Length: 349
Image (cartoon, rainbow, N blue to C red):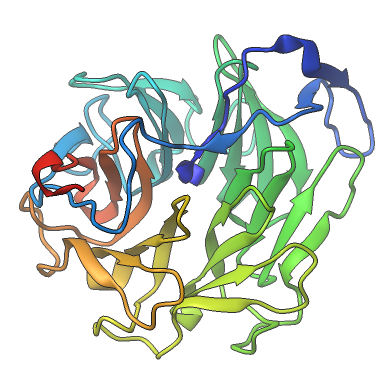
């Protein structure tokens, strides 16, 4: 997710309404009338000169692949809150895990009843939105082909709010619209209360590499103008679709799969900062890159030292996020861990 978004911000509860709609089972989904989401902006201003230490610190998992409370198995999407608690879609363990700051183990908060398709089960959760103030998660339950709303505290089961979708990632904009990438239909759709099909906001013209097409879209980022950035995975590029656009604009990659500074290999998690600099998890190259606005190549900011489990290495990074201090978090999928790379104040100007 969005991991790159703060999924909650406003403390003014006067703008919250409760909507019921039976067409798509959005029952009791709390929706904002005004903006309640903001870019997950750290207190330290991140800019093109910001650097991070090259050795990461494991903040979740890292005890080999497994299903213990101190283990993860192929984590994907995640979210970091203002308390530095990490919420992780623990894909192969079919659960959502809450990992508090400095904890040595996590707490299962959704999907603790094993793999399955019951309302109290998950099967391959791959991404999530966290709204602590509204007291729910929204989970991309991939192998069950559904998007599920789950109570944040004390919930024992979820409720399907979008069925029959090959969800690869989801995020939410400041108006409360949900965006979901459908990896097999090669489309990104926006959903609002009352929708039964969703509105196409990117792709939708079949699988391909034209500017009006996508090929296995995965991670998403939505800015305040409702422009949607898409990791166009199998086209090895990141594409920006402005609101109501008929085709996308390539903002990174599109030079074919490769490891040069102008290329990507199966890009995953993305963040766009307030200066429109793009940060992307370059999964196949085991590195995190930053692309200036309008640049034709990027720079490596983390990793790029080959696949491995050393503190300065990654093995197929997936989600990325900043915390409020400007530290960079990376889901290091095949090392079954989440790494934190501290912002280097000596190298930031």
